[in-house]
Image (cartoon, rainbow, N blue to C red; front, side):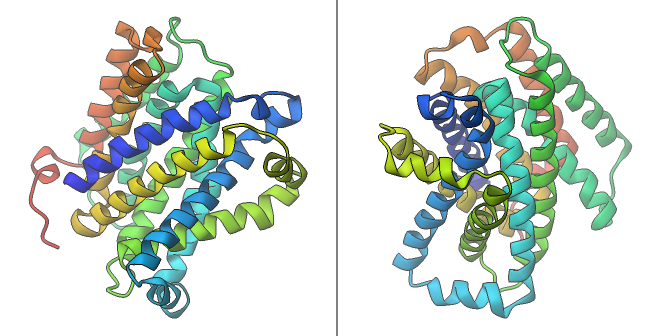
Length: 316
């Protein structure tokens, strides 16, 4: 359970730091930059994260085992599939959400992914979904709706933010369900899955999405022209993302997808707290946002896992 909580705290820090990067001049200077920002920043973010993961696995002597897990096991290949769904789909949606709805609000809006994951587990893993969980799911979505339409919060584009949040929710929900199955294979450990996931995601962005969007020129310019602290800020965000993913995957392997998602979703509350503390933006701490955030977090958790299961000991 501790790993799940750390995953949430680390992801909240990543959210706030990445929000800072997205507001920096290179990503807001032109219409092209604004359009490409979510995709280019996610590519750089996941590439840095893959490097952080490689440093971690290299220090532990795991790189050969990672290669075997990726290309020598069925589970490793499904991790690659999960990476495409959770990375280019889920992470892009997440960046869209925080870009158009703000770091704290985007984090909360995308926090419905445990509810989505519970539904997907019901259909694809045949896990029973009790009637009261459907009630909690509906309450979660109402909380997101109420939060997004709060008059106290400045939102750039409501519908693009919501589309991003839904992409994120479905992408991460599907990813967690796939990973829960994959990491039952003893050859696909959590740190191996992390390396496979981030490397695959970065490659898909670099080889497929950026060429389709004609985004390589802009991406290269970020590395060749003076961009100040932009790249170091993204690298720091990627570090906390790597820590979060490592703890999250470890929790999935130990206690299962639903319980891990339920613990990880607390990042939404931490993001609001960190936004207020580190950025001095107390405007997010309104009665409306606090109440709606609590509804999303509490009901999302109750949708994903029973209270007695959430705090039960792992049998792994």
